[in-house]
Length: 149
Image (tube, rainbow, N blue to C red):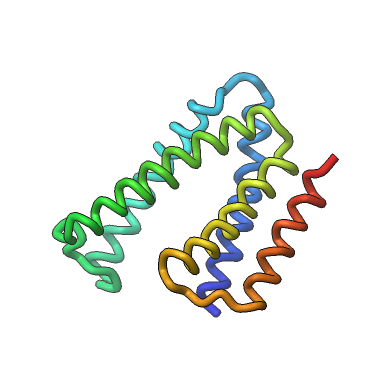
């Protein structure tokens, strides 16, 4: 239940945030790369503060993450940092600067779970149930309905 609550809050925050971002980009006073840089600049201190609180006060995360093995750190840096962090944000903000938020957002944020479900099944051995497959089809059909001309 907590996982779905936080997922819903993330979706709401991203939805509101991207409307602000699209409005900023539409003003033509700020470009997509600057918008990402500002987003990251503002987010990083908050995230590092949250990490510090969790690591020193609640101890709910492993404190020695810097000592994790190389494969784990490589996946963290390459997958989460470069691919999802920098690469996805660059592509998303460029898309927002060029298209309608009502079309760009559904494509980006529907392909993300679709990709995660498929890779979870193929690479991580997570079960692919008929219900998941149907949900995946519904997500993709919904994107086509939202974004089709």
